Length: 455
Ligand SMILES: [Zn+2]
Image (tube, rainbow, N blue to C red; front, side, top):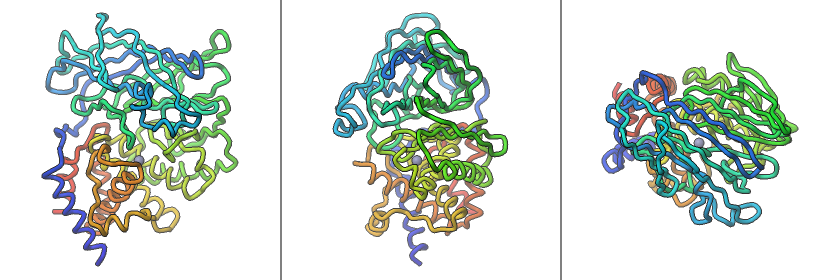
């Protein structure tokens, strides 16, 4: 009874929001034709703090309108000032530490261009628009400073996390000027990557891509070359004391990079089991490799990037939490990585499905009920589950988790009770196939759910 009432409540909320929520323009879910946008990046570590980077982006216009300006998210800029950092100055482990990204030169089709910035958004006006089906090469040279911070972009002890670190092309309408303190900031379409990373020999690197070549260079350095196809982002983690354990599920190579883990089996087994489980339920994992890396990360327990997941070192010895975090973050490879969405304005899509997927995994594998979190019952009974809001609507992380992750997953659970578990999983399988390497909006998801409910 309670479940039925809850299902009706939740679906009513979804429908109500359909009329009042600011909706973004629907995109075509079909596969795009033609060449992908491609990044070619050369990044060199000049100290643990600083990097020099040359980034070439071949931008393809896959839309139907001419493009007259290019928008890039430059998230490291947020770390230049305490007032713009996503982490309060008091949250820095050794006091405030500045990071930054300074653009030294930009050319488009070999012509110099002066970028202008609005917060973390870099705008490049185009003298000659890019017509549909055409492309242009943008070259950006920059230096980057990494703050002393245990965050997705930061360095702590001997580990350097580079997440959302380079100027990242953002589709018009999905850009932001402020790095939000809650949720995920990036909103890129998939692109192909080749990246050369030059680091001192003593470092071990793991990335979103696949290692294709390693060359030793002068003065104790090495250059590692990586490639990756159809990635929304390219993350890197470097460490002086990272060790790697490798394994395989089907054709997918798995690597677990760890700082100091006595209990690698729990992590590696969960990684393998979840990969297998989601392939069975949603469809094939789209990349040749999946990396999990233990790193210093706060306030997160885990963070997802395509082909690479960061796991917070502080939770690695707590088996229940590790399983729960991994189940959620691995599900993001399907929901966010492969089927994208506007992570800032419509974060419920990937977060609620990843949480619902982790519920399916935990119930199936551990034969145990999924705990939705202690605050949720009170929130639900107060009738104010607000899972469709943008990340900026939430005051803090706990509120965001309660509403978007758990409230959103309760919506899918209610829908499961209404249409049946197998039917809902088949529905998600169809969405995975239909929106593969594309993006789905709230409007489209609403239409798809309507079709499922009316069947
Ligand atoms: Zn998530």
